Length: 112
Length: 111
Image (cartoon, rainbow over all chains, first blue to last red; front, side, top):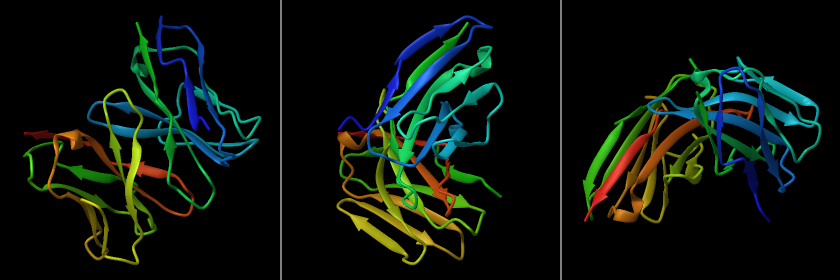
């Protein structure tokens, strides 16, 4: 039982490049979310999904896209990376009605 | 109205002492208040959580105190140990399952 798996662990992008951060969970959780963590700002919600085919925006959605075609996977796409997107990204999942999140180990992204 | 304010930003405690971290919220619809612990290079992990129907919850050396009227809650770490050195986040959420996080407190426990 792997929990929440995020790949890659580290990534360096050039400004304007695109990439997808992968997130997969094997706990059959309906709810999945993406947060970014920046010094002094805590964890801020980017996008979330309450089930396959359903996504919604969080607090800081600009510059990011998501889709949820299966219960297990919730990828986060950066369409045109900007230095302001340099951050540590965390994916989390939880079953509906139980907001105790299980977090992945994070992806550290640097945009130069 | 969605903010969760956390203090202090950093905390230094001697081994055996009590660590206290405070959070305040504004949205009265919040009904779930967890604390997460994060070690360097790792994702946050759920430490302890409370619902507003109780004023205190204790698990081992960790206690949440909840004041509904003041819209505040706090984490107390008794007999703090060097292994408790980590960043702690409070959070708050409602039926929607979304969690709003505080800005984090870096705790250092010195022997």
